[in-house]
Length: 122
Image (cartoon, rainbow, N blue to C red; front, side, top):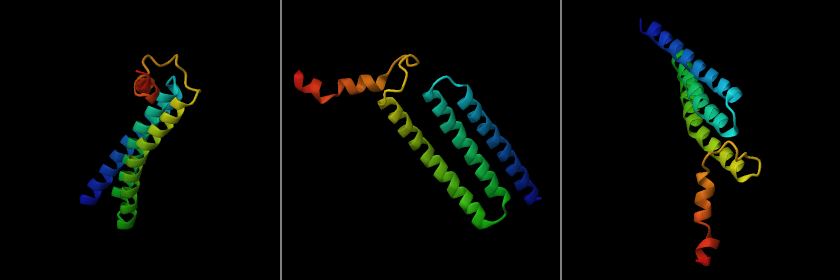
């Protein structure tokens, strides 16, 4: 009875995780610029991968496999936002990002206001 319930819950988590991963893949293919693609890949991809690993942890019925899957989920959820932030920052600092797609560039405005050259010249 309990084993059947765990199996069904694992299947539901697997389906939801694969749906999130599919949405992340569609977002990477269909969204217009680097920043929105990165957002789709980092948010939906991390949630999808985490749910799939949790499904593996539930259905494995082995403690060591479940522990590795849970640690993998924690690692995925901790490192994906950091890596997406670093990639976006490097892309923004480089000359390759398009200003056409940005309506407001708050990062550039903030760094211009806080630059030491402007503070010493006043």
